[in-house]
Figure 1 (cartoon, helix red, strand yellow):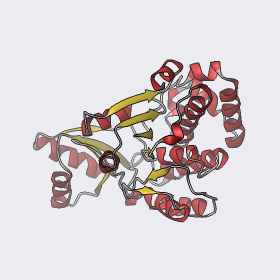
Figure 2 (cartoon, helix red, strand yellow):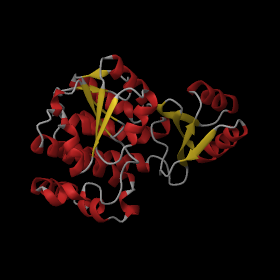
Figure 3 (spheres, helix red, strand yellow):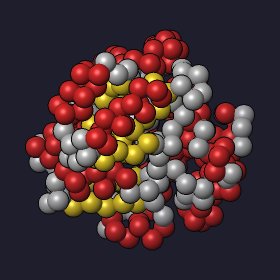
Figure 4 (cartoon, one colour):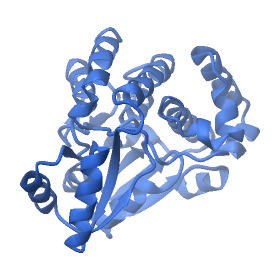
Length: 305
C-alpha cells in the first residue's frame, strides 16, 4: 500500500522539470495555460529564473503546484503505474492544494489562482523584515514551548516536520532572542530564507483573504482521501476540506503525525511528486523501514514500474 506526497515551499529550484517540459507538448500547454491564467510569465521563472523572482512566495506557491501537477500528469500518461490507487494523498502546506487538484477535488485553474492569491496574502500579512522562521534541530516540541513560554517570546511552532526537526515562526526580534536561548542550551537552529512567519497567528490577515476565496470556490469529493495538515488525519468531505484549508494558514503543519498515521494505516511506500526530495528526507527520519520513490524528471519514471 502506498501514499503520494506533494512538497511545499522551499523545494523550488530554477530549471525544475525542464526535461519533462521539453519532452511532452501537453506539459508545455499546461505551462502556457498557467501563464495565461495568472497573467505573468511563471513558466519563464520556473525554467530560467531569476531565482529571486521564483523565490517570492506569491510566485513560489503556484510554481511548485504547476511542477507537481505536471509530474502527476506525466505519470498518468506515460507509465502503467496507477497512481490513483494510492491510499492517501498528502501535501506539505501548499502541497495540500496539489494533492486536492490531483485527486480531482478542485480544478487546475482554480488551484493555481488560489495559490497565487494565497502566496501574495501570506507574503503581505506581516511587513517585510518583521517576521521570519527558524528550524530547530535535535529537540522536542515540549522543550521549545518551554523556552518560548518562559521568556514570553512572540514565537509559535509552525511545522512539526519529523523527529528532531521543528520549525518556529515569529516576530524577528523575538526569533533572534529565541535563537540565542537555543544556542545557550546547545540546541542547533538555522534561520530559514523565508519572507514571513508562516503557519501562526501572525498570518491572520491572510486567513481573512483566504476565507473569502476558499468559501467561494467549488470543491468536490476527492478521488483519494486527503491527509489534512491541521488534523494529521484523512478527510474527503468538501465542506470539511474547505474549513481545514482556511485554518491551515495559521495552524501548525503536523507533518510528523501525518506520516506516522499513514504508516499506522498500513502504508509501506511513499511516492514524492514534485521538485526536490525534502519530504522523502523527512519520512526517512520518521521511519527508516518504508520505501521511498521520488519523481521529478524523466529518468525517475522507470522507478515506478
